[in-house]
Length: 286
Image (cartoon, rainbow, N blue to C red):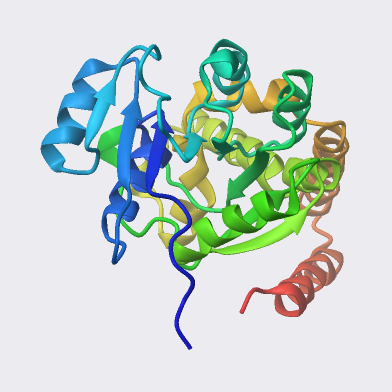
């Protein structure tokens, strides 16, 4: 059985940071790679990406960027994406398909509808990334084996399918979801762990603990503390109320654990830890 041909021949990537740079690197490895054009406000990123051979052309201004593109992928932070969609709407060719990689989908889908782009806009959220930022942090194969949440919104079914095919060609699996449910889930599985890691890092800093002092478990627990604050401010400003509920629950459990430790109630603490161990075993990933 032969695989379906890659659905796009000329792709524009807006933003050449971790996600955009990784996308350009990964597209280059396809059997019949498309022509990739980059748009970035950083001229040196364009120059470097061209020297690396991961984009064929690059622009720092949008005037001539969109001509002839089959697909545009916005690889920019949430608020930047919202602003750029509005700025770029009238420059997009009528047949250009649009997607993004923002990790909250509701605000982006609403903006696409507001701008009249909903029939050709499909939201995407690849569940992959890293602590680093910028083109230097990008890597080939970032999307391989990852899940990509795909939000159809009001897009044409054929458009949704070509976006799923796009991610499939990069080794990822597109999973359909709705924006509201997706964002509620991200608030507790992504935003809550991020803030918990920030809090843990602050507690360690108060005790004059450095990253070098940590063992493997401590390093795992604090890895997210190195994430970009600028990126997270965008997301947290739009995070649904599920995040506040999650923080309240975390605070409540920390207070419970503190009380057990202070009062020397070891048996109850052991039962609590056994409960979390059971959760870990029952719900662990494959």
